[in-house]
Length: 208
Figure 1 (tube, rainbow, N blue to C red):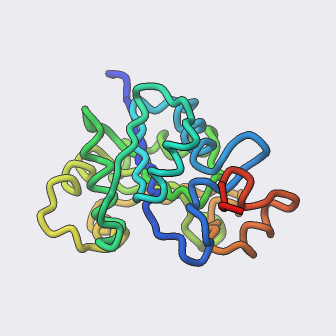
Figure 2 (cartoon, one colour; figure 1 turned 180 degrees about the vertical axis):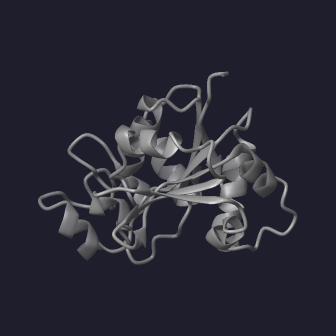
């Protein structure tokens, strides 16, 4: 059997009104932001290509905080985040030079790990839409087949809800025990619940 390759799209183009700073800039620890942590895990998996989709604020932050990523990490500017996540996903897929199964992940969940990615990847032959499930709730990231990724890329009506669009494909749920797969960090209170002792402004120049 030929070797199976994987890529990833990290969705980081949300406006982050409730958080007040770009979510990709949130500190995971003293030396890495959320987006740096996510890219590192997907690179370590390893993913052949990684797209990071950002808005204008995210692009500005990255230009001021150069992460020094390798050439297989593509930073993609979405100038129309108001068009929603499906449009962002299309932008991310456009940057992948050779489509293959793709992990789709939100930057506001930095708790991924290579073991989780291996679990999802191990069943790619069984379905086109794969997600971890903890208890009775579905978590992150999703893994989609090459066919699903190709269909999304060429969809002419990018107003669909991503999950609803993908539910027409054969699905596989992978049971996991880590509740962090369910996390979305949308507010300062949610951030401090998981990251006590770190400031959301650690890597952000607030102008003060």
